[in-house]
Length: 235
Image 1 (cartoon, helix red, strand yellow):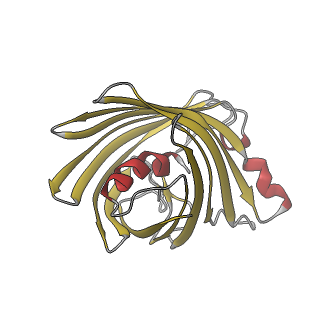
Image 2: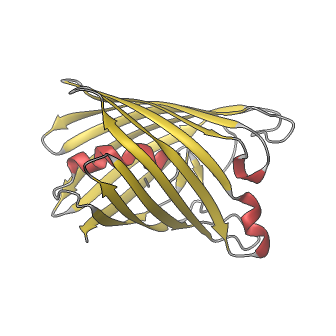
């Protein structure tokens, strides 16, 4: 996913590259050099171990799952645990839509749950001879428990450079709808995030090496290289 917005947007391209087909019930374990959420480190630039458990209702396209990772927000918050439910629909041979709802929860201290929040998402996909293009949107009416509305918009494209080797480039904007309740850098209501990743798989493992940066002037959101390795298992 390195679900979080970035995670949900990268799962499908990695699944297409995977050497094993996904069963109705599956789990994925990931080791990452950093856990970045739209370019912002959630682990104070430290590594992360992440895991998911997913069930797909193959005939209908619906799916349900849960995902967890270590985090480091300071003051004792050290675990993120999410749940999501959605529906993936192929409109035709080229167009698809994926929509659902997710809930993000935080654990470690009593106050950690103050940052819990729900989110709805819609992702459009277009497959062509040039690769897979995505237009994705996420909306929360209580972003990180602040009571503020928040929208993230992403444009991404994944293309194969050789069999089992792909490049994924993405650009997203995180935009607060209520600057009185939630802002980013100073009084800025939005920031930009750029990311380009190389993806491949070998012997049942998925590998990604990504470079990313944001418009934020933060040590946890500056330019960085993030590497990850993951393995999915059919249950």
